[in-house]
Each structure stands twice: as C-alpha cells, then as structure tokens.
Image (cartoon, rainbow, N blue to C red; front, side, top):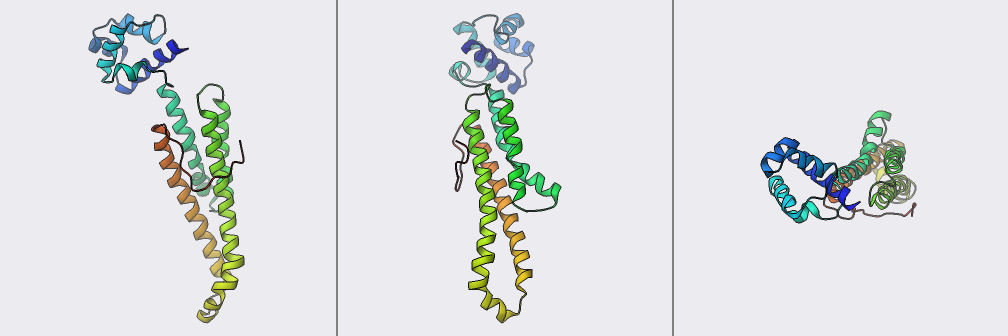
Length: 214
C-alpha cells in the first residue's frame, strides 16, 4: 500500500507541476521507462532516483516519499467541503432564502461521503463535521427569526414601532428575509474558510456545532 501511495504521489506531483512523463524524465535525468515503472508501481525506486525526481519536481525528497494521502484525495476532500455551497445554489434555484436550502446542502456532501467512504483516509470525520455544521446552521436559521418575531418584536420593539406607525407584519417579512439571507451568506463564507483549512490539513472552524451524526 505504501508503494502504491508513493507511485500515486509521483504521478500527482508530476501532473501538478504540468510535466508529462517525458518532461519529468528529461528534467530528472532518468529514462521514460523508469518514470513509467515508478508511476505504475512496477518497481520500488531507490533513494538516488527519488532524489532526482524530487529535484525535478521542485520539492524535497521527504515531501515526495512521506506516507500521506495522495493529492487527488486532498482535492476530493476540498471538493467535499465546497459541496456545502450547494445552499447558495438551492437558494438561487428555489428563489428563496428559507432555511430549507440549508437542509438541501447536506445532500451532496452525504452522497460524496458514501461514494468514497472506504477509499479516502479521514473522509468519515470530515463528512460528519460538514453535515453537522450544516444541520446546526439550519437550526439557527429557524430559531433566530422565531425568537425575534415571537419575543423581541412584540415585547421589546413593538412600543417603538407603534410610535413610528410601522406595520408589524411588514417588518416581520423584511426581518426574516434579511436574517435568512445573512445566515446563508455567513454559511457560504465559513465554507470557503474551511476549504482553505482542509487544504492545510487543519480542523474545520465552526461557531457552534451540534453532533447529530457521531
């Protein structure tokens, strides 16, 4: 398995660098056949060959040979986190900022999780965190407008509103739309931040998270 990971890393770093197998062979001083064998896991490269490949790719031999998940896995995990942005897509598609769009944003991460469940290291923990964060945002999106409309407006803001002769119902409608829009945009901002954290292999950030899925 470790040799397979190494062959994948050589290939992924080569692609990231924009090299063909022929270009990597030319820059490293190795034959194209040797590069092909490395990437196909047909042979275990010696230290000298690894050093030449690493230098040609502009990375350290430790970075090339360390036992970590492949770049393709990291890209998938970043895409998994970005899939939570589907809340914005659903909001535009359905033409509403209702909290229901945040529930919809759990579907795509769940599908991507199941698709690669047993193939990528750390995908279970990341997927559960993403879904739990989205479900928590949904609870927040339902709760805050209820608190404002049932408690804050009638008992605190109503006297001021009556003095200004503003219709309560109209204010509630405007208030809910602003709140839901703000929550969705804040959620989008958090998803983007967490995508950079996934890239850096750091834990996801969240204001509050209820562990619905453990």
